[in-house]
Length: 172
Ligand code: 4NP
Image (cartoon, rainbow, N blue to C red):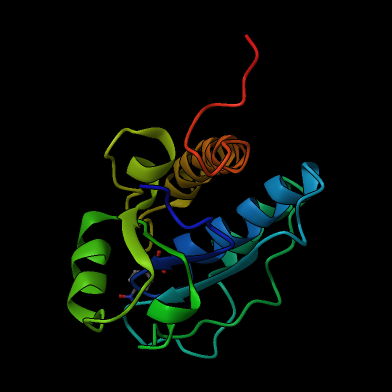
């Protein structure tokens, strides 16, 4: 059975001000490095709506800026039912985000919900919530998101190069 190609990805955390805006910005940057920025629709959202309309947490803006990525114009929003149809892949930052997403998902939604790090790297690990911690938590979260974003881009590229018959195209 061949899987539908992934063309749109929604990154999701609890508040959409710390982790998922960073994931959106970092993954966009990783795509841009590969000349693929126009090939995918990327967005982020929160399972909670408390911060809707707000810019990302200043600590996320700062760690992104340190790596040349500007996420300051993003605005938090809550996950909506139509996201489950609009996005091919919906990646939760931690297991409780994934549980909340599965509870919110309409029966007929076509988007696939998965844990970000598990899907990208094969290691089922949470991106921990850094909101109540210090700056070092944001440094660790940035590293995890960067590594997972590169792994996800590799994975998407590998999938895109597999013909619909399901046979690998490699000549090695
Ligand atoms: P995020 O972090 O889910 O990575 O955006 C949080 C932001 C806000 C809250 C919790 C986590 N909050 O409780 O307001």
